[in-house]
Image 1 (cartoon, rainbow over the protein chains, first blue to last red):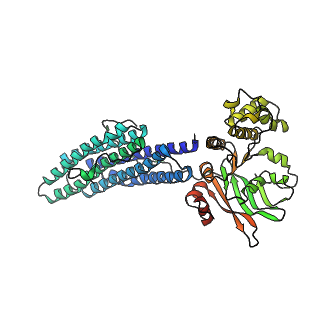
Image 2 (spheres, chains in turn orange, cyan):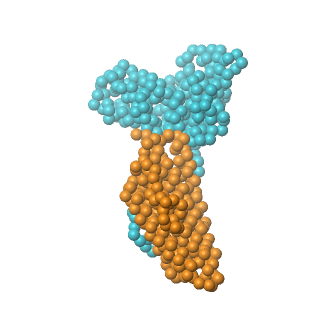
Length: 228
Length: 284
């Protein structure tokens, strides 16, 4: 039953789950630092990215070696290819957390708008839930769970649109406007984290069905701010 | 990981104390081969091969036909002594002892360093007697039944043969015969197992069983395997040695060691272009 291959596949998948845990910690830290204007925590999130990157490279190398040594086929090959993509999506999510933390530091001196901060808290919570659903669906090969990410993503997208609207209403104060512009990027980062979770769901669907397909067709979507 | 509706209280982020990559496992050198050359009569089979073989690892020897990999592995338990015109030069230190030193008993060497060949070669005796043969020869008669069972279990054959131990070994399938030969080699509790093309006469399923077995056995034994099947080396080996041929002006050929490294390195980024040519199938 190819014990060595199975061991390698199990290790890769466990590593991806661990990477997901690191990303969750990073996301929690980034949102928390933003909410409480905790610059020390923001710095920790930025430094913490090295941990994610380390695991990212180690997973990528594991995949590279596995492909060279074990020549996986069929379901084994799909696991490896899905893992390759998921690894990248998780690493990107952590990068967004870094961006949020850097922006947090840039606007530290400005009194934040409470409604928006509350909105980010909600977006962060939803993004966190999406990451959990994405990883659990991958682990249990749960196609329904993976597909449900599209609906979950809609909540974040809506919140993102609310942020945009709110920032436009911030008024004439220059500091507030600068803060608002930076917060548009924060909002966008959280929204993108959700998109990457959906992409992980697509990889699970590929793993289960053997077919590549996008859950949503961004190029033919009417929603103006859905990323292409 | 369970999906949760809420994240609960937001814990402060901790800087992960993720364990760094462990330092390379302390490698114990089992064989230290120095400038090994072998001649058969006037022709030189291998020239100046030097490498270290490490304990509890699988070391694969790969390379084209005639590159001397079988000659090399046969030197490791003095099997070439049985070929009258073979001449071995250089040194093979086995746990710091010269295998070819004066006073070293080749039979004792083969008790510690067992060998399994390409073609399964069970004796025309019962399954039990095949496995018990080595222990009997070496006077290990105490607890023979247990010893036979343990060897057959280690060779992943016990469940298939436990009810017919007195039946002829020759009636077993090819794959079973090969695992029987491995059990026979293990029955004397060797330190090293040399496998010379152990799966090349077997079908893919039997081959897979042998490869799983090798993977399991390396925790207890040092394993050296010669294989024509490059992918097999990639799958089972921790270290891989690539042998090739130097062709001389007079048309004679000599086997040389081109590259020896950790298997992932050999199959992802070999240092020598000849290795790259061989593993990518662009050889010759």
